Image (cartoon, rainbow, N blue to C red; front, side, top):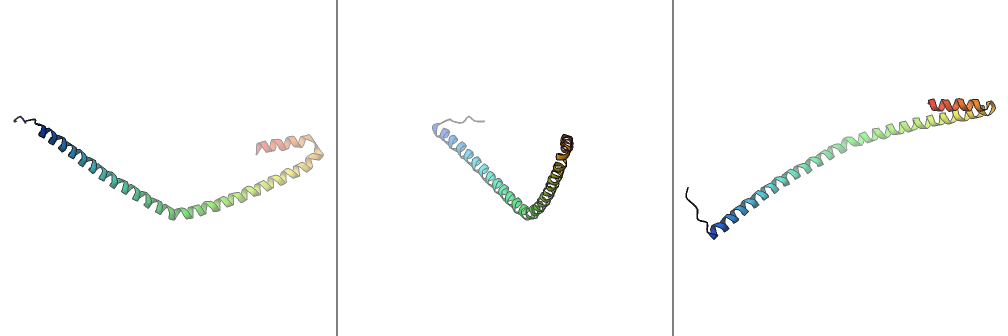
Length: 109
């Protein structure tokens, strides 16, 4: 292997070659990144579009279930209120013993 002469022009040439290789590597990585980001965005958009079709029926089902549960809760609240008012009318005649019973019944529920 022969020894290479280290002149100023060779030094500049080496710097330019190394810089060119470095810039080429950066450009290749940027192209790869751009492609990966484009694919990821495309996948995310495709997922969102496919989710939108199925979710509208799912939302309708959830709203129907919520309305049904709300109706049941309202009915139970009315029954509890009616039961409480009926026990209040009988408790006024029997005194404090019925209030202890209603308190223990409320705690048991």
